[in-house]
Structures are given as structure tokens and as C-alpha cells.
Length: 277
Image (cartoon, helix red, strand yellow):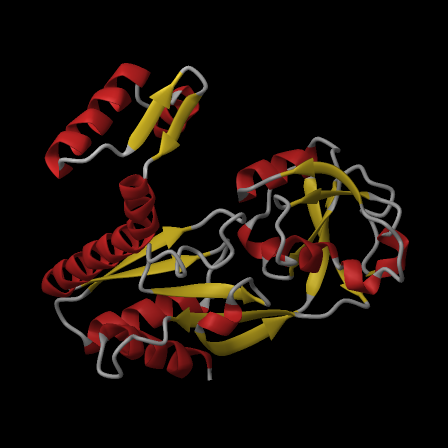
């Protein structure tokens, strides 16, 4: 009970009271209490088996209600990572709002620990993503463009004056990395598949561009980045240099398969396609 109360961020007496109220309302005992602890009764086990489906159904209902409210208010939530669709972003938004008067685009930047920018969790309606990304197979994806990857270095780094660097020259460097994940997002940005088995040294972990730039400028490590980072994240103490031998970074717009063909989501996707053709 103590551990359960801690996970729920409530006091133990409050949780005990809620359980007793639930038992009174149902007219059954859900737990057998003893000095050894608490165990579920047969009715308690039946309820415990049904709870996950109940919660899932409730979450889906809340999402449906929120979607209906957004349609009424004509707000399209667009998630994005870092520089979104680069210079095409303002053109895309302008085209969408021009063709859909009364609609407003709400841009929501996500941390690197959320590589689908809130799309899979229902926080946004559509998103600009960097491919490949976790859960990509569950989404509908339209690739917009690709760009080379380079490296961000501290200004005082021995390679900072170079005009181009071969990737193998960076293998022994410490890297500023995104938070660890089980899906390979961080591995892609560390280019682990192109290291011929050489291990990666992690000098720092960052979840947002400001943390990332500060760590690089302060000498904690270097980092691979799309070429556009040189334009969008220029700052004193950090230089961006092209790197040969890396797979390009692909930018896409993504949305959930259940979005209606006549929805604002598909209209936004068409604006993306037109602006990047």
C-alpha cells in the first residue's frame, strides 16, 4: 500500500480511504488484509482484470472528446523536432491557413526523447519527423526531403578549421547524445551502424537543442546533426562541418492512419507536399 501510494503521489491514508469507499460502493471485499500484507479476493481479481480495458476505453473517449473540441475551434496541432521542415515550414503553414480560413496551426516542439513529436500519444494531430523513427510502421508517412548530415564541434576543436571531415576521423571522439531508447533513435544519430563495430563514447546526454549546444560548446563532446543545424542553431563556440560517409537525414510529415481523408490533417499533408515538391 505504501508503494502504491507513492506511485500515485497520494498519502497512504487517502489511498486506503478510496479503496474502502470503492469496496462499499461495490458491496464486496477487494482485498484480504493481514499482517503479511494485502492480497486480492476473487472479486478483486475479476475487477483487476477488467481495469486495463476500462482505462483504455476512458482514454480513447477523452481523446475523441478533445478531437471534437479541436474541430469546433479549428485548431490543428502540429508536432515537430528541432527545425521542423526547415525553411519550408512557414510556406506550409501559410498555404494551409490560406486554403482553410478560420483554421489556426499550433506548433508544438517535442524533446528528442519523444521522436514522434507526440503523434503516437495523441498529443498532436500531425507531425514533422526525422526518419527513421520509433513506431514509424504505425503511422502514415510522406517523405518531404533529405539533407546531408554534418558534425557540430566546439570552436576550439582540432578539426574545427576543416572544410570537410571523414566520418572515421570522429570514431574516437566523445559524443553528446539523445537519451537512451530501445528503438534505435539514438543509434541512428550516433551512426552506430557505420562505425564498423567501433564502440561509441558518450560524453553527455541532452534532450533539447539548448542543452545540446551548451554541452558541445563546453567541450563535453561533439554531435552529428543535419546540415540545416548550421543555419538554425548557429551560436558562438560551436561550428558545423560537413561529414563524408554518412546516410542522409530524411524529413517527413506523419499522421495517424485513422485521420479522415477529408480532414484538416490531410489538407495539411497536401500543403506539405506542394511546398516541398
